[in-house]
Structures are given as C-alpha cells and as structure tokens.
Length: 292
Image (tube, rainbow, N blue to C red; front, side):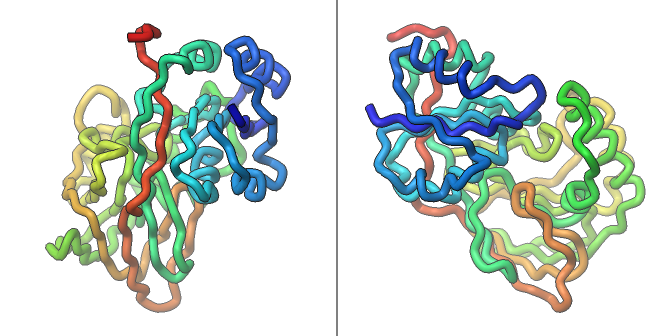
C-alpha cells in the first residue's frame, strides 16, 4: 500500500515527533513515506497514493483538502492540533496511538468540501466561511498561548469581541430565500464547531451535502455572552437556516475562510458559497475497536 504521512511537526503543544509517528505506524503494519507539511506539500499530494495520513490540526487537514487532486484516496486523520474541529465532527476519538492501532477497523465517512467565490477568487474550505465577530477575533489573535489554555483563552477573547462588536446589515440568500437583518455574525458552516471548538451549530453534519447558515442578531448579544461562559452546557442562542447555495453581498465586516482572514472590501462584493460535488473520504475507526 502506497501510504503518505503528512505531518505538522509544530501542531498543538506536546506534539509527537516524526520518528514516534513512523514507529507507531510501522507497528500497525504500515510503511508510509514521511513528509512535513512545513515543506512543499503540494507536489507530494499530486502523486499516486493508496492512503494519506494527516497528523496535525484543522489547518493541516484543510491544506490537504485544498490540494488533494484525487478524492478517491482515503484520508486518515491523527488530530494533534488544538481545537481539532474537523476530527470532532468526524467523531474521531482517542489519542494518536489508539487511532493508529484501530486503522484496520476503519470505515470511510464522507466529508464535504466547501467552495467560496468572492474577491479572493475561488477558495475551498472545510470548516466555515464567516463574517463579523469570529472573523475579527481571528484577525486580531496574538501569539499562541500554551496548548492546554488555548481553547479557554480563545473563548474568553471571543467574549470581549462580542461585547464590543458593532452589528452589520446583511441580506443572505439561502437557496433563494432571503434573510435580512443586523447581525453580530453570519457563519456559513460545514461543521458543527468552529474557532475555539465552539459548538455553534449542533445539528450540522459534515457529509450531508448541506451548509448550516448561522446568524447572531444584534439583540442576541447578551444571551451569546452568557452562552460563551459554558458553551458545552446549552444550545447556542443562534438562528440557523440550511441550504446548498448561499449568496450575499459583503460590505462592512471582516470575513474569514477557515483561518484565513480578509479585511472589509473597498466596495460591496458579491459572495457565493456552495459545496463541491466530490467529497473527501475520511477513515473513521470503530469506536470499540472491533473488526465486525
């Protein structure tokens, strides 16, 4: 089996070394070719592989999604990042050792790939396209704190931005039906979690062929701030619409595609967000580790 291990050696905090990962994979019966995501990974993803193993966080997995030419190649994710929103969406549990040991029981699960058209051209995404508060918080994020503190500190920082956020008016068409208002954020989600592992769209499914469009109205600032104190304990105070095609005009707020941020445009810009026809195939081991 022609197997590639694409590894981000700086992901997360106490990240495994290349040697450790290679030893674990060889013990599981695999003989992968190692490649660091910090080097030129685009060319290597264009080669013929039977399996690509991605050891990293959400950013590394998204790099693969944008550059993998043949989506018939299955992917295995070893989540060693901080938020690991993609791995959470695919219900990948356990540490890297446990996931590697259970690769033999893995089944392919669909992961949709989004496409955002706008002043940036065309850009693929896995997590979300967002406008407003989360995008602005990402734009102004400082040096990364220790891994153990990143999610909590990220949520605390987001609270500060929600306290100060100015609402922007949007008209968002979801499959032709228009939703208008003054919003603190608009997030077009492919996954249920975003940013610092926030479960902002609890019903989102990563392989259902639909986008979840999440709105936080201007008047929902107070309940949103309260929810951010303990976001795992209650549903988020958001409005959600689902569809296959989202169109809007972007004028005033920050925007982001996954973790890439764009400043407000000089002139109103039309945006179209869809899902591509071809999805990724993610190998998800059985949770109980059984063969049958």
